[in-house]
Structure formats: C-alpha cells, structure tokens
Length: 105
Image 1 (cartoon, rainbow, N blue to C red):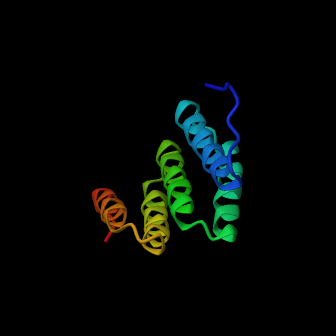
Image 2 (tube, rainbow, N blue to C red):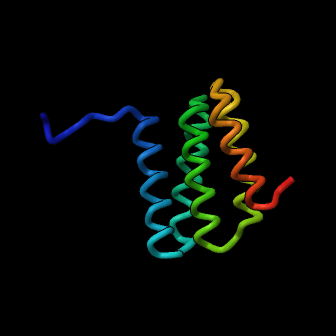
C-alpha cells in the first residue's frame, strides 16, 4: 500500500468540501463556507453531478452547524437536483426525506 494516493480533480474537490463541513461541525465558524462553496461551484462547472450532490450535501451540514435550518432545507433541494442529474433516485429520495424532516415543503 502506498502512502500517497493521487486524486482526480473532482475527488479532491469532494475531499475539500468534506473537510470544510467537518471543520464547521467541530468549530461553528462561517469562514470555512467560502471554500466549500468554491468546491461546489467547480464541481458544477465540471459537470460532475454526483460529486456536486455530495459536496452540496456537505454545505447542508455547514448550514445546520451554523444554526440555519432554512438554508439547509434549500440546499438539500439543490443537492437533490444534482443527484437527479446523476441518475441516483435513492439519493434523491433520501435528500427529500431529510428536507421534509427539516419542515420544508
């Protein structure tokens, strides 16, 4: 096993989004959000719908950690759009269920 693994650009962007979301959950600090948003935007520009859905879902965690469930619900809808584009119906359903659990229509 090699200690260094080469990631694709989309994989690196997902990892960056995940790290930002984890950092925000640990330390509720909005300064991590811009980096997370940049990762999402780059994935969207690359047309990587599945990866964008996951990165957007990380933004949901950030909104919740920062105490904004309304923004989290709106962001879940955005993640669902990407999941649908990726053809992942079960992911779309789970995102919708989470959105409903937040009280969003």
